[in-house]
Length: 168
Ligand SMILES: [Ca+2]
Ligand SMILES: [Ca+2]
Image (cartoon, rainbow, N blue to C red):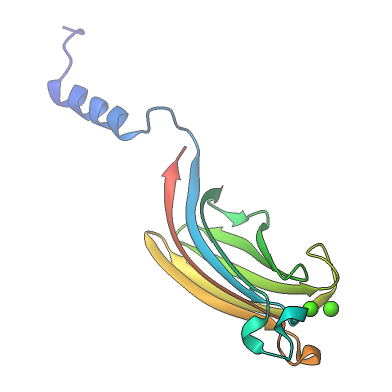
């Protein structure tokens, strides 16, 4: 009499087992982010003189990346960069502050300009913050430039991201 088990109880237990992720124990926030840079350097090459703005060195690059961050709290800084003319480097930084239903996105754009793509001379900066709720997307754009150079050095950056909670 004690070996009799209700079929409905078994079904409920099996359903609960099926609902839990097979290999997983940790819930994370998944973020898929796409970004694109457009950069310009202010130096006209010798073959292009007399001065012609169409000859200014330009560069474009884009990326798409999927990352996992904790469901709660701040992520490590995620950074992407690009360079134009061997002188103008753009760096796009992101920190994600996650909570259960959404993620707050803090983005900073930096423009470094000097004698190489490794220059740390910060000439321009911009920032944007957005909040993206789970299973949704959002984006923005920033632009960093330098008045001292007549705004001819610049970095433009645009991004779009989606986010959801996953088990890993
Ligand atoms: Ca320059
Ligand atoms: Ca500079």
